[in-house]
Structure formats: structure tokens, C-alpha cells
Image (cartoon, rainbow over all chains, first blue to last red; front, side, top):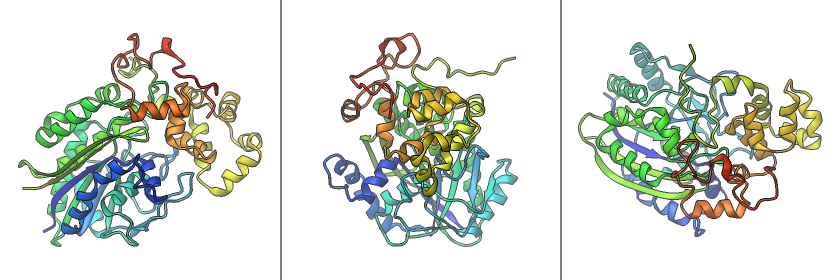
Length: 280
Length: 147
């Protein structure tokens, strides 16, 4: 049987990708941020998964206003890094895992979560920046990835509770897959940030750290926090944090082991948060 | 019965809901077209002519020509779509976000390095934080919102 052994949580700020791609990681502005992922890159080598189930949001890249699915699961063989307007990032093509992805889609839809099955899409910084942070700059990514895109761009977006319950359904789906795969689930986006209007640049260190505390120790309670609290306290784009609840919901009910925790302000407009949790 | 929209009293913030999305459909779709290199080149060669290929309102076209992101957002634009317009002009997300505050690029960057904008006074319309209407513009930029 396949098993989810760990979850990784990280922000996916596009400027982080640009800093990596342009060789700026040792500059004083970026050095403290990348230092926070030194442990993580070693941990990835020591705990290499067979598949990464990567929860992220598309930033008006694969999904224009023609259609935006609330939850979309990638079932394709591969995904090309997108041109978001600055040209595509010089990172490897992302290999998929169509068999496990289709299995999860079948199971989760029968559990009443209406996933959209996607067989063709490009992936943007929401997916590739976390891979770069955790894997560095390899010529191929270390394992296949199942992209799982959540709408957090066009309101209403799914609630924290729905995301958390969806994570539980994903856990159940993985555990009924026959092949003994080691699966990691990643929740990405956030932390506090606002990219628009006169309130742009909002950061809430205290709220972010309370979020990390509760994500570790009280995810069920955290799932009850309404959208408006995210917007008011963590900025309009801070709502991306609901996606972390999908990855957390997919973890065991037993308390996880916290392998790594990191928080840094700023990366461009954004507070960067990062956790590695292992299942017990 | 009206729908519950508890986010309308957050200062300096426009939530991109179904209503805004409807209003900004063509503005945002125009921005999406700039994900293709050849379209970016064609737009830059003659912005007005390129915009005239789209069924946008005149105000939406003027806001795009003015590179004024607050104006674009008031007409239904969303920042992730508008980012394609910013990228076409060679701007980063930090430059785009800063342009909406009235701060110079350096002032905004320094605010972020100092820990970002505080939430205090900026949770609800009517408080006295620096994102409130009566405190605009915030910095010494002379660009009048132009990116």
C-alpha cells in the first residue's frame, strides 16, 4: 500500500525563483532566506519520496477567466514550466504520476469532492518555486509530481474546513493504492502578504506564527478560521494559506514530528513560512 | 436577499469576487494574452492598437495605457492577471505592489525590509492605519500610480 510519510509547507514567492535563476542566492537580501532551506534540501536527499503530491494555486496561468476549477488534479505524464510574462523559468519539465493521480481522482470524487481532472496544463511559480527551494537546481526533478491546483484567486474560494476534509479524503485514497509508494504531500503559498491596493505590503508576523503553531498542534481548530480572518489579518493574498490545510489534513491523526520550522520576512512582498512534518 | 460579503470593509483592498470578475473579464483576458512573447512585442509596438482588438471599455483601455494598477483593479482587474501587463513592461511584483501605495520603489522596498506594513489600524475601514483612505498617498512618489 502507498503511504503518506511526510508533509512540507512552504511559501512560493515568484521572486525566490527569479533570485535562484539569476544566481542571487548569496546576496545579503536573499542569503538568510535560502539558508532557511539548507536543512530541507538535505532532508529531501535523505528522505527521497517516490511521488510528491503538490498542492498549489495557479496564478492566472493555466486557468484564465474562461474557466477556473475550484480543485484540479493533474493526471498528465508531464507539465511544462509556464511563461508568466517574463519568459519561462529555466527549470526541468515536471514529470507526473498518471496512475496514482487517476486513482486519487477516482477515490476522492467518490468521497464527494468534485475534482476537475486535467490532462494538459503548464505549471507556474506556485509549483516550481517549492520544488526549487526543496531540491535546488537539478537537471531533472528527483521524483514524479502530482500537481493539485486550488482556486484562491477568484472568490469565493474553498473554506479551510473543506480543504482540511479534502486532505483526509486524499489520505484515504493514497492508502488504498496497491503499489507501496512513499508519498509526500506539500502545501504551498502564503504566508501573510497583500499584492494590491493601498494596503499592499501587509505582513503579520504574530498571526503567521500562531498559524504555524496551530497547524502543527491544532489543525482541526485552525480549519474553522473563516476567510475574512485571513484577509483582514494576513492580507488579501494571505488566503493562499487555506491550501496548507489540505496537506495537513492528509497527515495521520497522531501528532506529527516537527523536523524543521523556518520563518523569514521579507521575500519581495511576502512573509515566508516553512515547515517539515513527519508522520508517526 | 443579498449575499454575505464580509470583506467590503477592509481598507485599501478589493476582493476579486464573481462580481468583479464579471466586470473585468475582457481586461483580464487581454492581460492573459501577454503570456505569449509575440503578443508582448505587438502590444509594446502599438499599445492602443493592440487594446482596440479587445472588447474592453474605454476606461479599461485608458487604465491599461496609464499603467495604473489601482485604476485597473477598480474596473475589475485582478493582480495575477495584471502581473502579465507589469511583466511586459519589465516590472517585478514588488514594483507593481509598490506602485499602488504612492511610495517610491525605494520607500516601499525599505518598508518591506523593515518588516512590512503593520496590520494595526488597517483591519477595518475607519481606523487610522496607513492604508486608510484619509492617509493616501503614502509616500513621495511623483508617478501618480503609474507603474
